[in-house]
Amino acid sequence: MIVYEVLGSIGTAIRCVLLIPPIYKVTQIKSGEALSYTSLLLQSLSSFLILTYGIGINKYLIIIRNVLALIASMILIGLKYHYYKRGMLTNMLESSL
Image 1 (cartoon, helix red, strand yellow):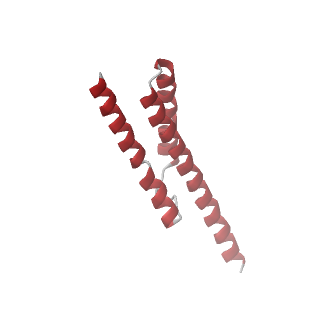
Image 2: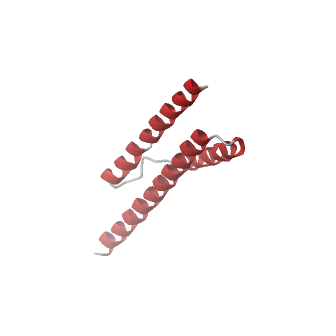
Image 3: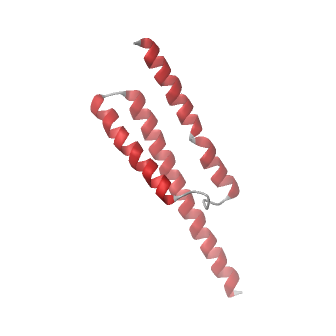
């Protein structure tokens, strides 16, 4: 049983690290254009449902992984919206000059 806990912990750590690059890239290029709202919303829904399952069976590795995935999805949705609004404002200012 300990082997499965170790493997689950390693998998959770790797999954958490994999959440960082998309957020970093969006903030570096200051655009969320390549991101799909549909994909992000489905990822959020999936994380929420699996999080609910993890809470129901009281498995902390499932809970941690999906809380972090849900947070990352929400951050990406927020960044996509922020850069979209920022681009619209810039376009409006440029067209009024």
